[in-house]
Length: 159
Image (cartoon, rainbow, N blue to C red; front, side):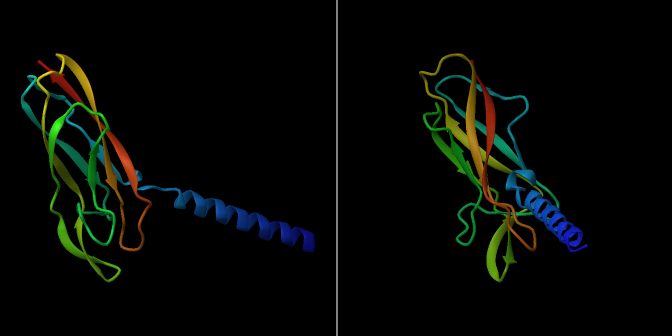
């Protein structure tokens, strides 16, 4: 009987650990989605191009504004060696809030990162994939998920 009781306790603990582990494995990219313009973008070589990266944050979750000093703020990074030059990024402003007693600037719901960049005059005509990563850390009112880099590819057609 002791053996059966011990096996039941061990099995229950293992199930709880597995269930807890599955929840712990959830990442910020499970509650934050990033997308590039569906139709892509196009311009001539030597011209500036403007586009947005859409953020869609699940209900009850938020991320932090770029430059937040307490938590990991949203950040957009172009792939190293990418073709665009003079990249200018405008991040969503968010709204002031409080998280575990700290004043923060939060972003929730749907938002957009606006990007402006120069397409080099030497860039060949045709289609190009511009690769970016959006760094986010999602939190709800009780916990934060591990930060992650969400890959986003923007389709550029050089005319």
